[in-house]
Length: 480
Ligand SMILES: [Zn+2]
Image (cartoon, rainbow, N blue to C red; front, side, top):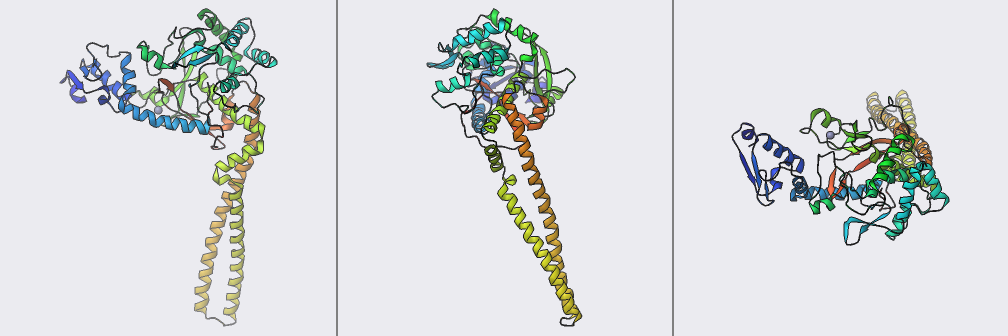
């Protein structure tokens, strides 16, 4: 059919609903583009869609496509994956209302002002505009023993904070995250909580990798002027970002580390001049960037979003390391079978036994030789028996060498582990993420395409640490 469309033989396509147009909304979108390029009218009967009435890029169409049955199955699979990954690794998620707001009890997609703490948000903006850095604002809040955003969040959901035993402090990353969050002037940003807009049918959908800010979606805590002014301070005060100050010729923070979940290629750093605020740095799939959307999709992720998610995940381990270094090492070893002390002891035992047998065979061969000399056995029997023992010995020697190499690996990994855990522990007090921390601790980070769950934009960020994976005791960790 596509060939006929390209050949100009078709000018009308009708399907039962939008989901019939492609296996997923990306494919469906591609097909609709092709239709519009070739002037083909497209009608989806059940979804009330007609490209003659609607602009082909009608804002609600992609949302319907996301919500369509076929994609819904895909979404729920990913939700499960996300939840599981979240439990294992503290996945990034936007499911938490920003500090200063609560989810509206009557509509979880809407935000209402949290009177108990909203004044703290206002004060952060005031202090910031008066010239205080995020670091010094964090210090002020800590001096005044103001309950941290994290701890407060857990108190609102009636769960103990996983940070309880940590010296629970305000950090500059949290303060900066708040200053950058357009929610505080009453806007929804970057497709976060898109469902609110979806229900009102006023979503502004631009491009897969470019969600636009929707103003006036809830009560502001600061005026837009104040918020914009704070963004200007941010630009002139680079050291307040959670990324450490870097020179421009340095390799990017995550270069070579970020992988596309779909094509496996590297994500590439891009810079874009944002109309309202500053230069926005983001990563996207390099395959997509070079070969286009027929090969892969954007896998767009903002540098700041990624950096905060990664830093906060590392700091989660730092909390564990600070609490009990040995326990963390044990947990890592436990989760990574081959590194286990128990296994290494088993290796040692097998090697010892094999070496004993190799020596024993030496003795047997010696005896055989003597028996042959004294003519107690014939040359023929000697040949047969000695060959049998030599074969066994050769096999044992090569197996033992193999085991010794594996044992050495395991021992090295155990030693490295101590170094790694020390390195993680150092991260407890850092305010910004450096290239060296990323390289020292992280093997790779696999980034999924954006997808929508209950109207919230999700990106799975699968962080593969050099120390492998460990099971998380806290199942409710998320980065807000
Ligand atoms: Zn890709």
